[in-house]
View 1 (cartoon, rainbow, N blue to C red):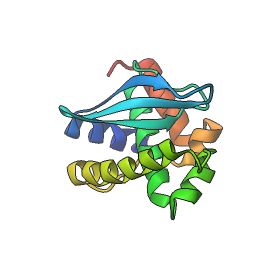
View 2 (cartoon, one colour):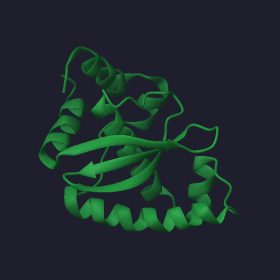
View 3 (cartoon, one colour):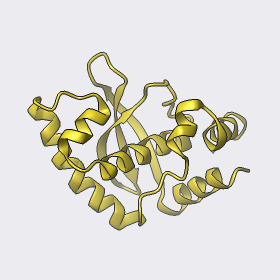
Length: 143
C-alpha cells in the first residue's frame, strides 16, 4: 500500500473521520460536505472539480476535506483565498464562511493535530502518484 494512503487511513481510523455530502453550491464544482470527527462535525466547502467525491470512497472524501483546509491555511488572507478558489470576494457570504473556516480549522487541528492531507495536490490534479494509489485502493477494498 502507498505510504501516504496508509497515513490517511491511520488518521481516519484513529480519529473516526467521516464525510457526508450536504449540497452543491450553485452550478460550480464546490460541494458542501459535513466533516465528522467522532460525533463533532463542520460543514465545509470542498473542490469537487474532478468529480471524485463519493461517500463510498471515504478516504478520497477525507482527502478532499483536508486539502481544502490546507488551502485555507496556505492563503495569506481572504482575497487570496477567494482568488485561489475562484470565488467572488465581494460576496459577503464567502467572507462569513471564511471566518467560520478559521474557527473550524483551529478546532479540527486541536482534535487531530497538524492538518495534513498527505497527498500532493498536484497528484490530485493529475490523478497520479499517491492520489492514483488512493483511488485504486478504494476501488479494490471496502473500508
